[in-house]
Length: 256
Image: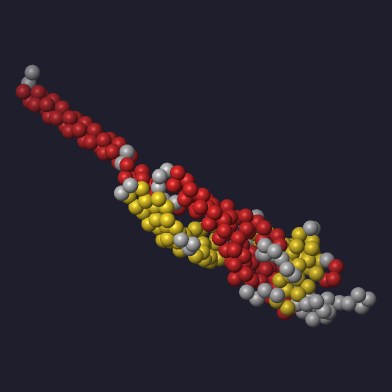
């Protein structure tokens, strides 16, 4: 056989051997990284996923209770409609005059209602997680923590400042801040409710048909009840969430 051909074949074999060794090295490296016990323990130390699902469930539950009732868990000044207590957002108990805004800090009130509902449920979730970790021989230390919230377009952001230390053997992890983002249109719906109350207070009327033309993302219905009370149902087409609000103003006495 020609010496040049033999030399070429040996060169090709050498290249394939090198490629094979590189592939074996890469596969071994991937296998080693997957089995890295330190990485696995780090995942076990992270409470984020468990707590996030708990917070989301609590927020959704709170919003589901609040929206039909005008944004409140327990309405105090309300109109009963279809067996639902709907809070008066703007009301004048007398006649002729326009309604008076009953909740000038409406968004802040909604935020407070959500926080008061979510906080104890969040504490219960941390207690459950602490118990489960201790059953796996972890040492867990936590403090009370503080919870804050921001309502924004299409979402609510929750910020939890809570010191939490998890220990096992020689390993220790410390957490101080947790942040949660839950998709909801409650902020947007509340702003439409504020616009509705504002126009009713100023003009004794809310041009909801024209409003929907300018804001096609919402569907608004008005139902007029006895004693000149109006129920506005404002629905987000995107999320299908709906808020009901009650308004009474510019009422005309019976017989006139």
